[in-house]
Image (cartoon, rainbow, N blue to C red; front, side):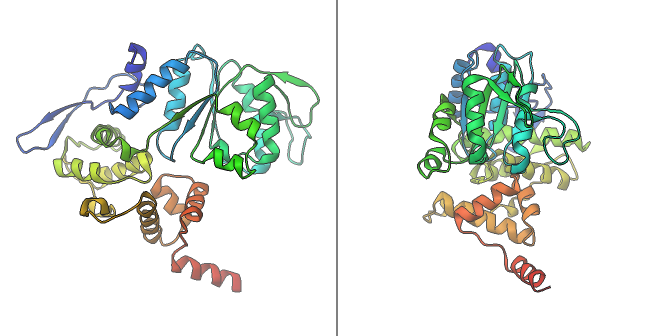
Length: 352
C-alpha cells in the first residue's frame, strides 16, 4: 500500500494491544485521525486496497461486489478520498431503500408540478454529485424501466429532470455496489446487458468476514472502543475466550452483524471487561466436523434471529444489521418462512 492508502486503511483507535499474564487483551487508547475505518491486515483485504489504489486516481466506474454488511460503503468512500475528486461531494444513494416511484426523482431531480406532490423544484443526486463521486448502493434493485436513463447518464453525462426538457450536463464519477449476482440477473432478463457492461469496468469483490477471520480481533477492539466511548463505559480488557469465540463464528451478517453484536456486548458490560454474550451465537457446525454449507449456516442463523424477534421482520433486520428488503430477499432465496407466531398474526389480521 502507498502511504496515503495505508494511513486511511489503518485508521483505527485500539490498534495497539498488550497481552496480560492471564492471556486477555488489554486495550491502549491511540486515537489517531478520522478517516474511513477500514480495519484489518488480511491478504484478502490488502488485495482490495491494492486494487483501489490502482483505480482510484482514474475516473473509471468501479463495481463493488460482495455480501451485505462487508463494508462496500467504506470502500467506496476510500476510492473517493484517494481520487482527484476528494475535495468535491461524495453523494450516497441506497437504491433498495427508496420506493420505486421516487427513485427517478431522487437520482435525476424534478421540476415543480412534475407530478402530484412536487410543489418545488428538486435537484437530483447526479446534480449534487457534480465534479465528485456518486455511490449507488444496491444497484441491482434499480427497476428495469429506469435502467435506460441511468445508462444514458453514464455514457453521455447528461440527463433531464422529471417534468423538464432542458438537458443538464454533469461530471460524475460512479461507484456502484450490489450483493446480487448481476450476471445471473442479466441472463434472466432482469438487468440490462448494456448497463451491466457499462458498470463492470473495474469490478472489486469485497470478501465476507468469514474469509478474513484474522481481522476479527482488530474489528472487535475497534467497535468495543467506539461504543464504550459513546456509552461512557470504561472497558479496558477483552477476554481471550471472547476473541477466540468471535473469530470462530461464521458471521453471516458480516461486519455489520459483528458491529451490532459488540454494541450489545458493551451495553451488557458492567465493568472494565467486555462481557460478550457468546451463547447468542449459533454453534458453528464446522467446529464439530459435521458437514455444513454456507447456505445452511445462513439459513439457521436467520431462523434463530426471527424467533428471537418474535417473527417481526423489521426487528430481525435490525438485529442482523441489514435492510428489510435484503432480509426478505435472503428469506426467499434460502426458503426461510416466517415463524408460526407471525403467520398466525397475519392469518388473524386477514380474517378481520
